[in-house]
Image 1 (spheres, rainbow, N blue to C red):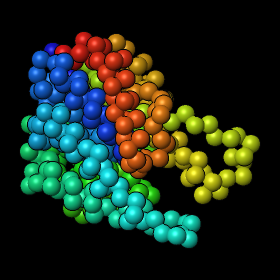
Image 2: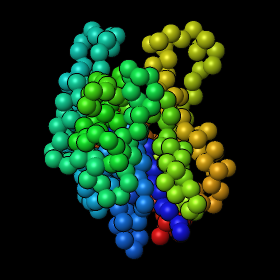
Image 3: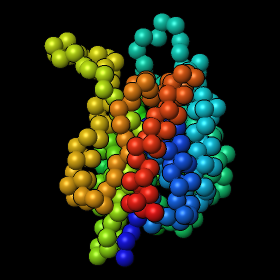
Length: 294
């Protein structure tokens, strides 16, 4: 029997592209995404999309409402942190209250254990110093918005989040993509079944880092030259997944093109560029995605 798996990695405002692609893809499938996939795995902002599909069982177009341009501008409100003369960021860029409020309004009183489709979020436990998977099969009940909040608590941008007695952050700086975790968990659940894996990213940067100049970079120099982007690069993971799964794997991703490198750029121009990126993905990958999981 074939088992279909969806892996979602999307950080910051780039989740808009991921959400829009899924909404357009769903319109081409015979049933909603939450009924199409047997397992949904998310990391960073992609974790919230995974919960919208797996826990709330919403149509993809409704799931995308969580990351509408208006919501993204509320979550990433730059006026809340920009202060003249503050050249060194000593605290998280955002206090996380707007993000948490948006998640709580969206997921309300639901629990991760309410998911009828197996749903897994990838986080990192800062005290235990190891990754931690939150799932609907966990021993402790976890509110969905708490889980999504922790999974998207990206260092430098948002504070560490507390879930029960653990302090968690976004795991994307250590593993970048949800792809291999999704595959490993699927094989654990269904060791003898055929696994088909659709992995959707949120674009990757191509801005060159000046090699000779980088020899003198300190902390601020590397942060200014996309240190997080380097840590979150998924190129190697994509290659490994292709070697493991062959034709049973499809990765939807590309260069950012006109999208800005900054993960919190909510300008009208950048958000439109993200919508355009999703539409290009649809033109390039939709037929193959339908053939893989339809």
